[in-house]
Length: 304
Image 1 (cartoon, rainbow, N blue to C red):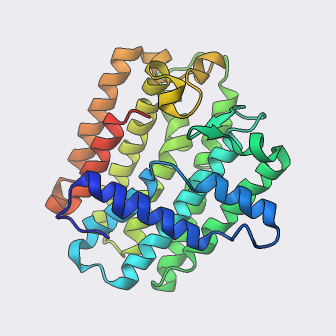
Image 2 (spheres, helix red, strand yellow):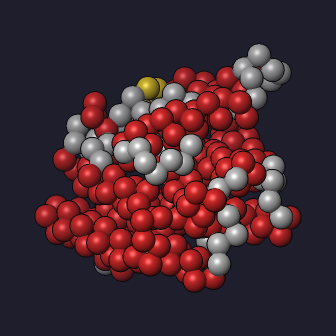
């Protein structure tokens, strides 16, 4: 699963995206199981698409910490942690697309959950996915103290001091002019907290030491900011078909982003600076962090 000898592209496709798709299919309730419609909608929200960047970060962090010493128990722990963060991410997208939030009709090239199943069912899908994420963490075959750390970490990353808090600020700042510092604060919470949390879940699951955790925490924080800057650039330069979601939504809703605050060229340069800074934070891992470096490159150069 975490073979360093294969190319990054093959690893991301086969060992992360395809493997995680299969694992998520196993852990999600069957749509044949009562209540059927809710379970069908949950599977619709999670399966059949997505870059799985957050899952990749969990798994790549495992490589950076332990390299080829990952036994079957650690691999399983990383899988459950990766699944947990993907479920949180999926729930956030379901709620974010709803009319009371961004009111989007398209996600990953298909109708959003509330369009296909209705608003009430979409709300419940998000609720169920969120709680399921924590159910996966408690299945990790690691020391109970590490499970507790992982649960607390994901709760903080996705709660009012993390993703949910950032989403609240995102709604608050509509039709407002922001300073760069305010914009960064919002996106460190809205997007960055879960990116950083993904890295740290991998570190916790593998019992990383203090020095490694400090470096990985900084890497995750910087990469999370870079991810959002690139997202804002893509919203400006790509079309809806390429993005798989409605392009130009921030401009339509008069929501501040890095392009509107900094300008397109400066935002692109800022993303490159953050990419270099992220790489600097993990130098001491040497070749063990090659998958993390690959993810940082993928984030910078992605087209959707």
